[in-house]
Image 1 (cartoon, rainbow, N blue to C red):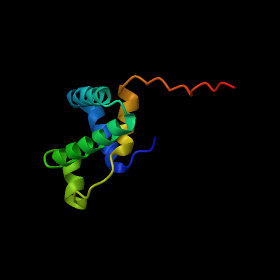
Image 2: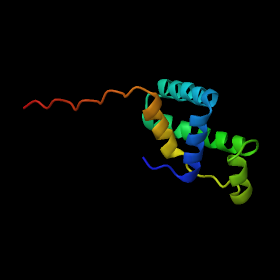
Image 3: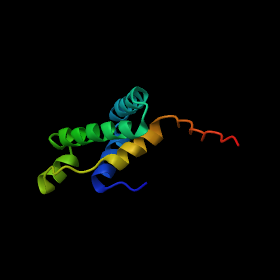
Image 4: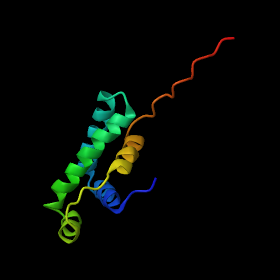
Length: 102
């Protein structure tokens, strides 16, 4: 999985801050549990990750420095959302195709 620079900074920040990581693990698991469609879960999580990035950019480095240099133009956090879902939730069983009868 390839993360863009902003996703990678967010992921690294979560890895370095156990309390933040635990909060996001719980959030990811709750979203996936609430939404049966993994695509919908990833879209919702992507929006929440962007909101988190914006919030962090006002108070902590490295987010603050990047926001000061580049602004807060909306960027995708979809790859990070997909990665966190795979990392922090149990895989869902694959649906079996219906058996065709002659």
